[in-house]
Amino acid sequence: MTISPLETLQRVFGYESFRGDQQAIIEHVVQGGDALVLMPTGGGKSLCYQIPALVRPGTGIVISPLIALMQDQVDALLELGVRAAYLNSSQDWRTSRDVEQAFLAGELDLLYVAPERLLTDRCLDLLSQGRVSLFAIDEAHCVSQWGHDFRPEYLGLSLLHERWPHVPRLALTATATSATRREIADRLELNGAPHFVASFDRPNIRYRIIEKNEVRRQLLSFIKAEHEGDCGIVYCLSRARVEETAEFLCENGIPALPYHAGLGAAVRSANQARFLREEGVVMVATIAFGMGVNKPDVRFVAHIDLPKSVEGYYQETGRAGRDGQPATAWLAYGLQDVVQQRRMINESPGDDAFRRRLGAQLDAMLGLCETVNCRRQRLLAYFDQEIAPCGNCDTCLEPPQAWDGTVAAQKILSAVYRLWRERGQRFGAGHLIDILRGKPTDRVKQYEHENLTVYGIGADLSEQAWRGVLRQLLAQSLLAVDHEGYGTLALTDSSRDVLKGERTLMFRREPEKKARSTRSASARGKDAGIVLPPDAQQRFENLRVWRSEVARGHGVPAYVIFHDATLREIAMNPPASMDDLGGISGVGVRKLEAYGEEILRCVRE
Image 1: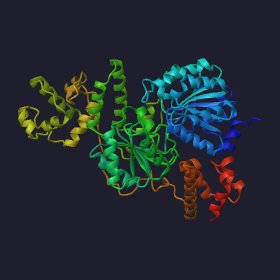
Image 2: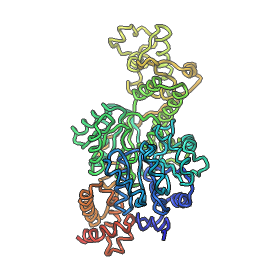
Image 3: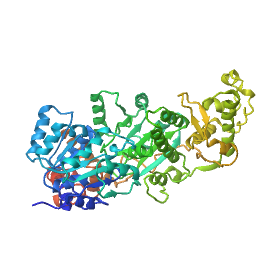
Image 4: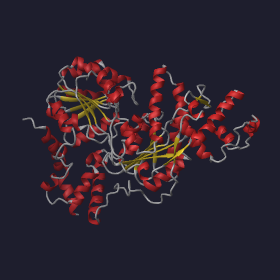
């Protein structure tokens, strides 16, 4: 007899009730309907296809872009007693053959496949010979050519509708604007499917964006003051920066590992395994890392280079605090980031429409960085969601000042104008600031720029303040980076209105820097700010030690055995019997049978 979705949730996964739209989505798919599902990272997307796959006859096929994600999810499902497997390039031919035979024999509930593998004739023929209960297309934003993580192989997935017209399909993602959603639906032929859009808000994440100044030192200070001993991810734009930053953190007592596409597959795999299975490891990575990583206790995500888009930034910061406990999204950015990103857009291959789209994405990201209002409001507005000020971002907690920067802007735009108009010269930010501040450098003397009428007219502002003015002018496209790749600055069509006094500019002034000698409320201690009574804390630590030993024996990350939230609940409400333990959230039938007696013994001790 087939059990209901709710019974499956309770018996297999150990949760009492569904959250948000989960029940509506699951019932829709169980009945054979297609769906486009948007839920934030940690919002429970996986259950939306895992439960229908267990309820419907046949095998659920999950299309996933990363090998690590497949292995992680299959390990977790096997612990729950779910018959799951994957097919990917990490397996030898004998293992792949065994998985294929299990699928044909109807012995699998879920089968994970990479899109490249799925689209081969061998795999398509295999699926045609078995019984498929549903197709789940995970990380569906990869289909969007305007998105932040386009993967061309995803475009071929429209054939699923052609070859299996009566098998329900779900496209799932944590990140998509309304335009990206329309593109996903169009490319995957899901135009008639309902869109289930959950709130994009992750209230447990504290967003903080600071002005870059010796960024590695700033990063080290942030980690030591607020997240020492915590697991975190640091994102960089280049491979070289990843290597340098990881080495710097290690030299300063932070256990850090590098991850980028230039490392060998074995090294990447080993580093990812350490990050998933050990506590307190910091992964320094390019954006190639982290998609689909299910590690729930990532306490911070730091960016030391400016992300290219709000979608990418949201996706990456969403890897923090998946367990719902407090976490921090920290970003340092400065003038050079804006110059570099503008130059990369100018030099990018593609037509003008493509470059305009990249420019619009960067403008939205810069707007988030420079806003004087609530960061979370600005972030969620990008995804067409309105909220009240959040009270948990830097601009809410330490409101910045806004100041009239019109005169300062006119001074620097005048300097750019005079250099070009009178001398046919263009220079970068540093030299322009030296001219305005009246600094007699060798270069100023070489070009006789001390004779310019604008020389010294900006001595009232510090070098850092002028860099802030330039950064915000670039952010608002009132200055442009040259197309020749030298990083020199030029006026734009919009500059004229400012020079003529027809436009007022209000700039953001950073609040005074305060020494942070104690950990913030967002992350006190390894237990993410949750303070347990002494006896419960001791039980919790005992349970974590037991869990680590079990995980090591099974060769899986500790959270695959039980999440911290489940262990905390056991520690706070120590069960006296198997029935009591079975009522704890996250303890399903299989885990109760496998670990119940050991947990009760651990609690008694």
